[in-house]
View (spheres, rainbow, N blue to C red):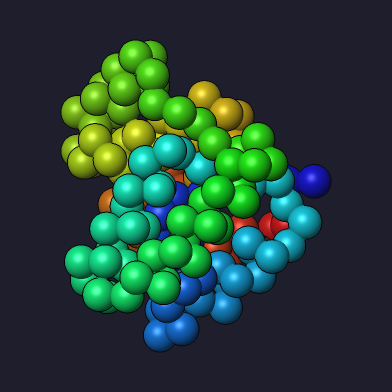
Length: 137
């Protein structure tokens, strides 16, 4: 079984039928792979659903999705070490600390990061897309 660390963009792609990674995100999240994410995902998906989409129902569905991943033991909580690692990675890789947090979280969990962020994460070899992950699962 494959172990994937999911960032917020994958969760959002599952909710957004217009996202080019929508089908792959749905497949990955519904499959049998072990999933985990960062506690930051609660805030990120909620922010997009409320501020950008203005859709409280989508926010509730996304929060429930993160909670389902968490209930399977798949939630990495930010702590002093993770934050220090994220800051170091952000500085080294030229990333936001948010993105670097997912990179650090995946490393701490021993999982492969999955993201729709091709520019900042996938193109640098720090993550794979949902489509790539679905094919590998």
